[in-house]
Image (cartoon, rainbow, N blue to C red; front, side, top):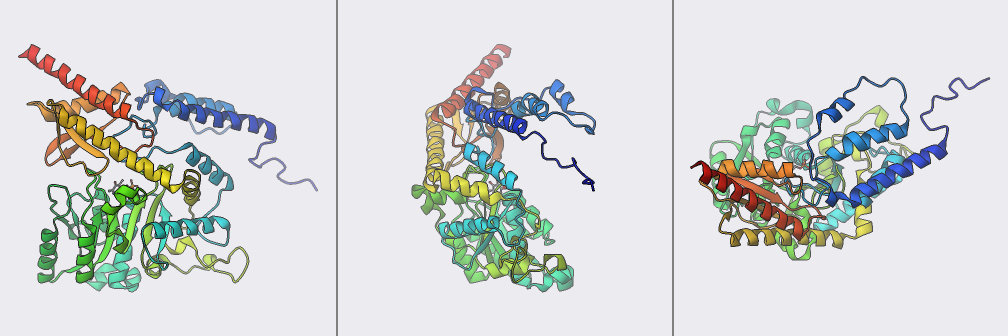
Length: 486
Ligand SMILES: *Cc1c(COP(=O)(O)O)cnc(C)c1O
């Protein structure tokens, strides 16, 4: 009998040809990474390249090398720029060649890390153990890789909800229970926290945004007052969220004070440490995070300061059993076996919303093993030193001003002008189009600011200096134009 499907497999008939193509593709990416500094941070995707990708669904095959040629021509040059040393716009990591290779290996394995008994699960467990140790969490803590901190914060809110209302909330929902839970975070907390409250069915309005002090840290007295007021009004405070590294200026809340309040008020203490938590790897910075070891749950990203390629978010939960109670579900097709592939006593699908999951742990494990955790810590220390250099130069230039505190690696500043809000927005757009450096624009205490977040391990003093020199040149040019028009 002939095989009914002799040639439907998607594997190549000519492996030697695939090897040649594959090696060329890999070399192309090494060339790309090696020459990042000579490229533009960002280029607007041009109309001809946009037209080139707007095709009909391809029903017929195309040679891999031709598809790759299109990738090189139409896609690769028009990236969002965060791998480039001049990228300082938003808090984003640069990725590494090792991370890229590990991602390729993970794709080759095509592991589904939802559950069952295989080694990818064990690597994720090992990553959880390292993370637990790094942050001083007990052995009973659990954790999970997720897309990013937005998702990890959402899961943290759900864990807190289960802790307060018990597992029945999963069946009966909130309206049946009829209690009004309130949560607390600073006004500088990331927007995904309000969205987490919304998605958890608790409502954005039940998140109290507490004012911050001059250092952009939550005001402790105002927090106490808000909790007391809510209790007096019959509401039920249940969750306190501290931020370790605010997205605007990099402020770290007083985590020790928050831990004490959470303990006294019996609130779940969650920390959004999206980028800042990994300062734990930098000996001189770790002390800024003191109190983080007292969190009930901690969300952070390996893909920001950790330099792991996107995406690699993480949630750590002190009470592993509570995390399981929040997410585990029975289903016949997920039945556990005593032995065989369906065995294993720790299935990630019990600890988060995803069933099918990729092998994010591998690129993170490779990054830590290959470079060593101390090297990541040095990168973090280095970015903070660059931010201080930048802040120092701004303070020394009478034409410029700092517009926020610089506790870590983020500098908010502006070129002085009677028309500063408009001028600084123009300067940032001009810088993006110049392709040399890409800061972002934000609002700090009501003023438009140029924001440089130094996160990328490739960023050097020359990039920071190029930013200052370019802002000065653009600001002065605008002054000349203004004078000519006056
Ligand atoms: C980046 C960031 C987030 C969101 O994390 P994602 O990984 O982008 O989902 C949340 N909070 C803070 C403080 C951040 O810097």
